[in-house]
Length: 190
Image (cartoon, rainbow, N blue to C red; front, side, top):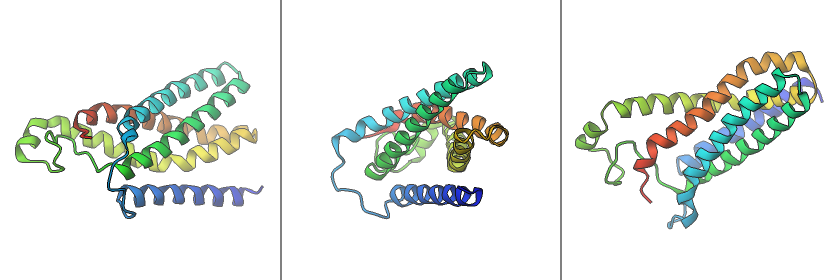
């Protein structure tokens, strides 16, 4: 496969995932009238998957620094699979469940002045973390896919150059995914 094909493939997958997230998250396709009972478990599952991926990324770094390339590859394949499962679960949750609003204590989908005041500066902190998380999550997918390809093809120098950017962004996204869950969890109303 040529680099041109790989770049087009990665761009196509990245754009497709981005569009699916937007279409389902913005409910451009109507969600079912009844929220399925399993949906209540998806946020916690997503946090567990993100937390696990955070740990696995650090374990992967340990193995490559130790020169254990086979274990580094295995851990990264597992991390990639868990991140893919996370993406499916995330899309499903945000498609099936109306948006939760930080500070919405009564679950009416609106943030009153009293609720905003009660949330205080924690709401601003949450929104800053969430915004950086979303922007970096959207931008890291092509980096992950290209890094993965370069690593599996043993294109070590190209892989190293990409991973200098991919690793810290991917780690940040997985860690902040857990933080976002912990911050918004009190405002989930099922």
